[in-house]
Length: 184
Image 1: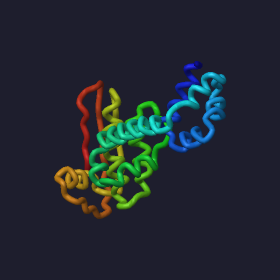
Image 2 (image 1 turned 180 degrees about the vertical axis):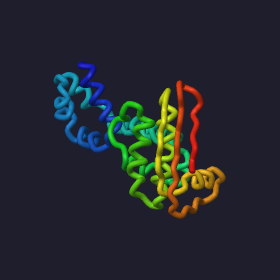
Image 3 (image 1 turned 60 degrees about the vertical axis):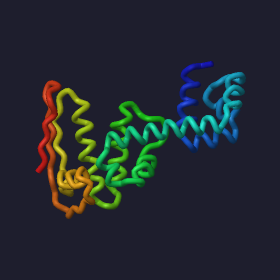
Image 4 (image 1 turned 180 degrees about the horizontal axis):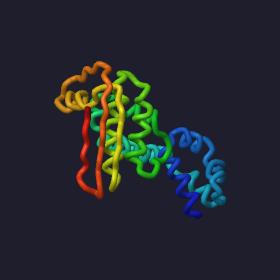
């Protein structure tokens, strides 16, 4: 079996629900589209759809948990809506740097969501993720809402209530040292 084609097909089967449905409607045809020979295509056609769906659900659950760990305050603020928002923002196989890539996609989607401060909160958390991934970093972010106050309210378990008031954040890390940040 050609390894590259097999891996690409499996990745789509496990991570793309639309592709998975199309594949199981015409498995031989879809497998051949990936350049697999007749024997390989027939092997894929015998895959149990229920087993693929179970494994895909496991991967989806792992991706959800990783996103919740990456943006914990955003998850706390959104509650049950977090998972739906995440999978509306990402599709297909995870990209390299998947935690950061998924957080970035979600923050972009939340920029247009309600409550309006939720996008700023996601971008605030994403700034820590991005700064923490670099050996040297200087980042400056502008927010429409006082994200430090919102984060503190969420961390204490309170329901955030934020009036629109611009704020700014600065993140600094030099030579792999401790990450410093300032919010005003």
